[in-house]
Length: 157
Ligand SMILES: Cc1cc2nc3c(=O)[nH]c(=O)nc-3n(C[C@H](O)[C@H](O)[C@H](O)COP(=O)(O)O)c2cc1C
Figure 1 (cartoon, rainbow, N blue to C red):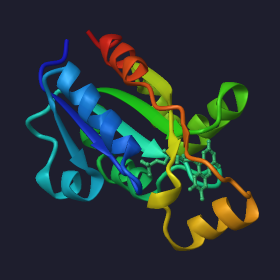
Figure 2 (tube, rainbow, N blue to C red):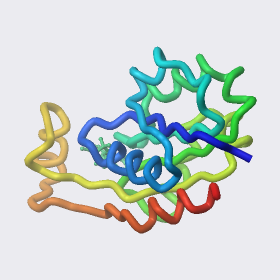
Figure 3 (cartoon, rainbow, N blue to C red):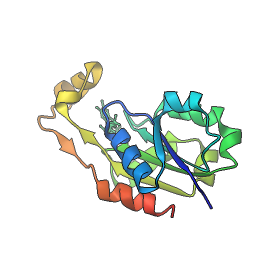
């Protein structure tokens, strides 16, 4: 099936965005931040993959709104979803389920959990307070994997 691919993402610190670009490149498609995707329209695309970061166990509200708003159009397309987060294993699967509406996950061709990054120098405001002061994290943490993003993209071909 599927011709043109659009990867729609939200990203506060850039890791979900990096994955969106890798996946879009691998499939010869485009990536767009969710606010822009909402206005650009999905008409020219046959496959829509969405990406959401996870903060405090929750996916992006903007991505959820985008999905609800475009539910009818999405029904006619091939879809996929990933989350970007630090959790692994069962915890991360729970986060994936919480990040997206049930109807969307049911029809998605592929879903994936991709490893996030916590780069201390990038953190802002309350997030900095939580990670540095409360969690006492002293070093950058990265579970970023370009290879996993490429593998995920390959499952759509
Ligand atoms: C304040 C804060 C809370 C976070 N909470 C979670 C969490 O509940 N579960 C998780 O797996 N990762 C959590 N993370 C890790 C993020 O998912 C990770 O930093 C991710 O790369 C963020 O994506 P972005 O760079 O696209 O914004 C948290 C990170 C921060 C800074």
